[in-house]
Structures are given as C-alpha cells and as structure tokens.
Image 1 (cartoon, rainbow, N blue to C red):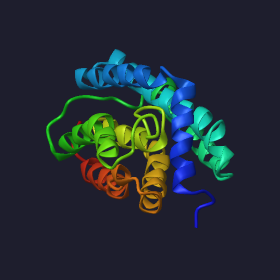
Image 2: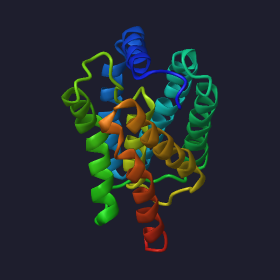
Image 3: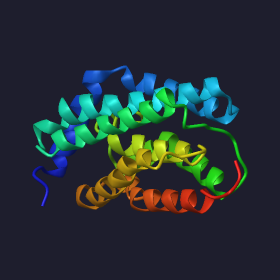
Image 4: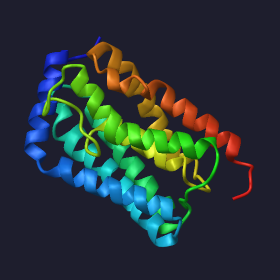
Length: 211
C-alpha cells in the first residue's frame, strides 16, 4: 500500500513541473546533445554523455525526490540518495577514470538501446497523454525518475566497457518504478519492469565480445 493516492501523485508532478520550468525544455536539449555525442564515438562525446546523465540523475535525486516527492512519501529521501549515488558513479567511472566509452555499434544491444532512448524521450510522454494525463501533471523527460532510468539504460547499451556498479541503481529503479506504475495507473512506466532485466541480459551477453 502506497502512502499517497494517485491524485496526490499527479498533483505533485503538476506542481513540480511548474516550479522547475523551463527545465523540461533544457532536458530535451541536453538529451539530444547526449544522443548525438554518443553516436559519434569520440572521447569528447563520452564526456558530454556522462556529464548529461550525471546531471539528470543528480537533479532528479535532489529536485524531484528530496524537494518534491518527499512531501508525500518519506521513502523519497532514500530514493534521492540512490539517484545521487548513481550520479556519483557515472562521474567516477565516466569522467574521473574514462571507463565509459560510447559509440554506434551493430547488434541487438545497439538497436534496443536506441529504442529505449526514443521511448524515454518521445513515446513515453505521448503514452502519458494518451492515458489521459495532461501536462503538467505527467512525468517529464530528463527530470523525473522513470524517463531518466529508461534513457540511461538506452545509452549504457551503447557503451563499452560497462562498469557494472553503474548499472545497479538503474536496475533497482526499473523494478521499483515499474511495480508502482500498476498501482498508480502510469502505463508508460510498465516497460520499466522489462527494460532493466533486458538491458542486463544484453550487456552480459556482450561482455566477452571484442570492442
């Protein structure tokens, strides 16, 4: 049983999106830059991708979980800490140690990764609107947990080598966010339940293949 109602949940998104405007627009711009950088497969692009992902996770941990969601759910303090840890892990592995390299590679992992990216940025909000959740009372790309998670999993499927600790929090949230979607009538979050395990399976299968 959740400590808040679906009405409270969507009202929270309405207030949050209004309070952080124009952050949703900025998130789309940064997301597009990150995807373009990931497809180039150069070191400067790697830095851009990791910086954008770390910003998305850090922002969502503080602005959404701690400053907004905590008002209706005390577990948001823990959730926010997890998101900040993920931002730190991405920074540590991707920037401090250059252990995240992105590129446009052939294979199933690449195709699924691009599908996840497109889903998070385009299909996700459209499904929300189709379900009757009008803006601003919907989760938005880049600044709320579930779209950030799907987008990150998509880009990590384009990365090599993958520091496995950086995958732990997205996997956890794919299960937490996906399971809550059924209780809160957020159909666009249902794919979260399979996105994490699918990404893990594809990355595990690819781990021993040449770069």
